[in-house]
Image 1 (cartoon, helix red, strand yellow):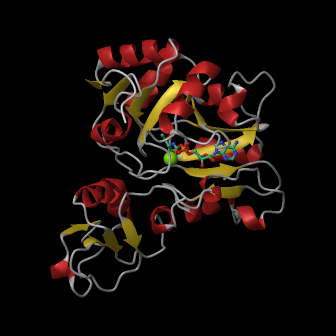
Image 2 (cartoon, helix red, strand yellow):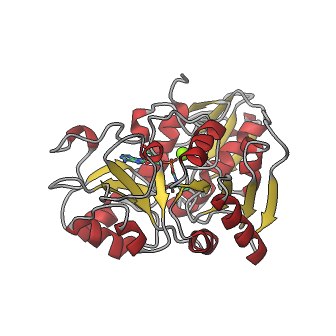
Length: 330
Ligand code: TXA
Ligand code: MG
């Protein structure tokens, strides 16, 4: 559903970085690669640009955005980091960790971007194109995944174009996002940090660093922020086709998203088979999860069977996304 002129796509070179920064500074919407997924950027300090971003994605306005920054000092100008938040930032930034903390006094990010909360989510991405754009603009950039709200997240420029052509000004094409699954979101608001969204950095990796358990939103010692994250939205990351999880067999006409060397019974009936990782590697599986979901959806199959994926490491985040993709649609 195009709404305006075709979106420009530029290869990620110096000219594209300058163009992206100029476009953002003028209130435009620019999609760019991060290490996790492609983000749809808007100047976080410009309420009009942020309003356009919610509109372009069809995103509910109660769902706050992550402010992306170029360095730790820029984060500290937006958010009040306690000792845990500082340790997390020192250990994992630049990287796929988003930290939710109280807004700092004088925080320049507009109210709309934080959905009126007194907390803010910040992330310093580990991707040269994202970092160059952030540095060139010199302001925080809100960047949700660059897809229509509720749909499969984009890991390539062509996924962004498929969802948002004519709704945004520019896509900077920096090739596939290497990690393939969104950042882990951790709130540092009280005595114990809370895991709001499982993601590209495994829970166990973070727990080793802090030397203790991350709380879960529903079991948090302190009241979890509302909304607590995409957990509030049961259906998310969804292709057009229905999903059947932990499938042990495949019926004629169904598509198969496999994992590991052995295929479920009846796989020869499948209209298409894609394997997340023949060698059962969760990192490899995360990197191709969203691209494979989009490709199987494009076959027109009404149902995508998904093999069982172990919970260890990144498996938890992959299964989180698959459960939401399989959830009843609104
Ligand atoms: O990897 C990523 O994080 C990607 C790339 C582009 O950086 N971005 C991304 O953004 O996944 P988005 O908007 O799809 O997810 C942001 C998540 C949402 O679940 C939102 O609810 C949560 O962060 N969030 C943002 N601000 C929050 C806040 N103040 N309190 C609690 N959750 C917050
Ligand atoms: Mg998203």
